[in-house]
Length: 259
Length: 296
Image (cartoon, rainbow over all chains, first blue to last red; front, top):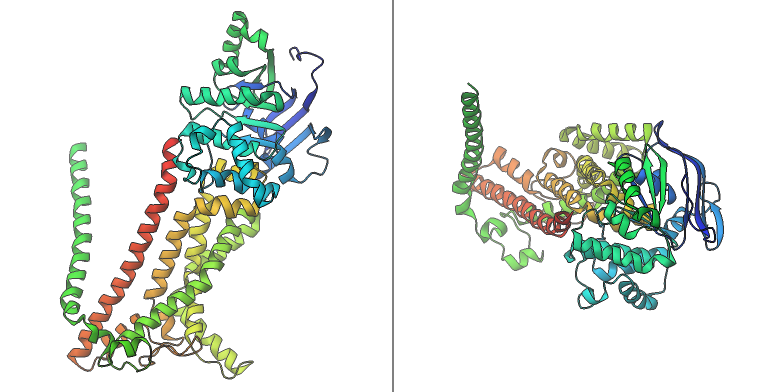
């Protein structure tokens, strides 16, 4: 393991000897990692190295697949309290609301732009009806979408561009007051300009959340990351801080490691 | 050599297409020639004034209006019974069942799909006999019994189409709602069912079409040649397919035979209208969802 970053940072995710497998085939082996609030972590690695599986252990989404098995300790600091999410009883819906996730491709509900935000807020948070419009407006501003959509809140969400859809997905998460954000290659389906906008949004909110993003782009990692974890064969093989990432020889080593 | 095979294969495909189209055109042409002339208000209402017939104040003696109403009532009632059950079973199979339960349940659905419709009719007939001799002596074959048996007949299509439509959704979409903290049921209801709407709709239309045209089931469970408008769900009724069958077998005059062709044409139009409605609904669904697919 590489350096852990400044000591005064207070970690919010602690992963210790994590093993995850499906139907007897192990995907993550003895994985250890630590993540902090306010420090955006980017996970790099070849496809098949277990990046997505790792993200899905943090909101227990792997359990939606047949014969998944998780061992080890995975502790999250939620509402200032440490919880081992595979041991301490916490309703799954509650966990998944606090540990939000954005997928590679935007998955919107087949309703209007506003309802894409209002529906989860109503169903999951149970917010009273009169508070919903202000929440929708607030979170659209937060996601840098307000100016683009304020005149067509009732238009079907699928009329938005790909980049806007992905930012709407992020807005939908933020509306649910999460503490940890998991981003699974959030810009994979976007063109360069649209992905820059998503990155800009992430940088503007990162201080308030623990953000763990999977990326396939080294240049994106250099723009975004406060720290980079390199995955290979289901384990962390390298960990670099932002400063190390900017040095040319580290970059060279990383390139060789990943590609 | 390969060129020759390709040519032969292409020729055969074209021929097959031409043959299919030819048969359909021949069939439609035949029905058109024999049936179009008779299409008139009199075909529906006979000598009864149309308004009096529609409102049911006067009985229709020589028209197919009661059969049309009977068929529509039959289709509505059997859909009412089969659609909720089919959707629920499909959802169960796609999202809740696992392991050996799922295997047994799927096997049962496939068995049900393989039952010939005349057997379903016999089952209904036997059921009513059993009820008559045991707990409900006044039980008799009726619209409700027919609708119930028809519902059983079309149930497997509904279940399989719903299950397939739900299971073929992309994995990420299935996870998206759950990752927001939706309960499994909220996820199914607000995300997956709308997304699978196209496929499910196809199943519903197929089922409705099947219920509208089946003759064997209703033959044994309550349809009669001259019942007038159905008096209620426990009464006898007339239906278009049976009316056609009856006239084809026992027409006593040229005019009655001609009426049979007219009825066949109307039944065809009814099913065609159903399929066109379904096609329209499907294409609007397609637009809503494929637009999104393009961006991926």
